[in-house]
Image (spheres, rainbow, N blue to C red):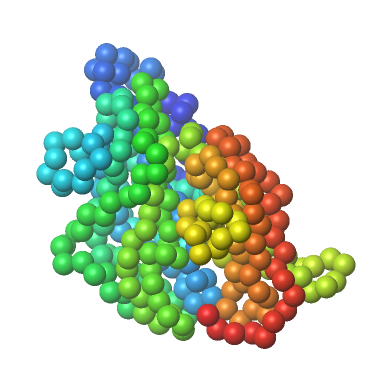
Length: 298
């Protein structure tokens, strides 16, 4: 098969394997094929101590049924990458293409991922391999994604994004010399989502507060006046200039919380009532961290 213009949109990250709906595959010539691609992104991890998080992904399957019966005939294999992905590199809406194949047009309510823990690893910044308790007894365990909204695949295909939350999937206590794997990831139709972006600055009472890098920015849903009721939707991190960009959010009104890295003198900052719309980016959603406090490890 040859890729179509729709597939070419994803070539900035990696080569895309083509995919089309079944009747297009049987009836149409290659120039008319439509594709469904699957991409992988991630959320932040404690970058102060970790250089790489390599996850070996064997296969991605989708199903129109909401059940997670592993032997159900409703499952369709949509990608078989069989290689490792460094999740640390995938931030700010960046993706790495997993691949694609023929699946019928329809509405998909379940997404699963098969991984190989034996070929996955975490590497510290000093080059050490950090121990991971994968909590799996199967050779290649099956993990199920959170599908927040059914994923529609039309005759024109679709781009499915798997957003892997590294920060919540690998649990540790300071100083994070070993980890426990508890996977948290979601699957969305890229076309049905929006993005939020902004800059985090440290409030030092100066006229021009300095940007803060490696800040964890968490996206919550809930009542802004009742923090115990907030629940996490996604996370991101700031770059060297203090900028953050969190993509693949379903339309809605969110709360942003910025937590400075370990050892920083700044307290968390919050920005509420951030509106995300489909196909758009909510820009300039800056967060100022409150005045310095005594540095602590968290």
